[in-house]
Length: 77
Image (cartoon, rainbow, N blue to C red; front, side):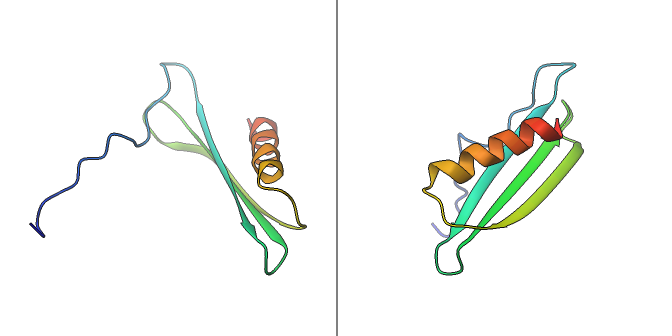
């Protein structure tokens, strides 16, 4: 059974023709009081149009870095 492949229903799906897709995420390092944000904008073929990452020294609840990532993604677009 080691050689069996797992089928994943998730994964990246392309945007509609003529549009772009923004994927973003945030991570929290509570020990170092850091927040990392990553943003990628792709076209319908999956090619990266733009990308950005940012490190912020701060402590937040988990929702705040996600909101910052959304905001930064919209600014990048």
